[in-house]
Image (cartoon, rainbow, N blue to C red; front, side):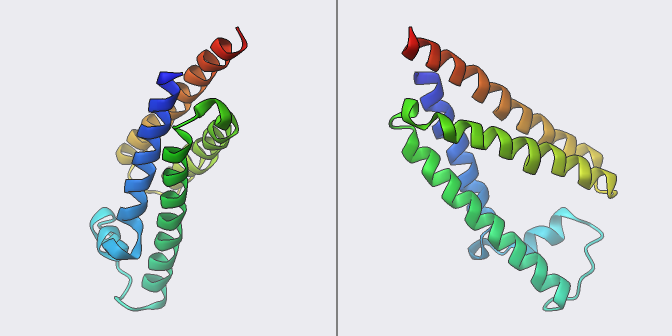
Length: 138
């Protein structure tokens, strides 16, 4: 159960930090301009505002998910469903989305690195949840 507890804390903290970085407080537009060398949307233009708004939405989403995961780490056995939600999220919003972006022409190297991170989160989630549920059942 300790491994799952730490999984909740580490992944939750990671999500929370990602959320802060992408929140409006940290200036997602400046981050996007650094991440994508071809970013040429005029500052304050429609595309620039759209990217800012989508980044803010994702940031807020990650803050809530991360905070809840940290809360759930207190009693991980009561929150197995959150683990499976995160696994599904990592598969679809993580790996599938990264493959989609690679197909759109974004840099392969950085997205492959993110795919590895998603796979680590998924693999450890499944492994630690199975171990914890076997201990609880046994």
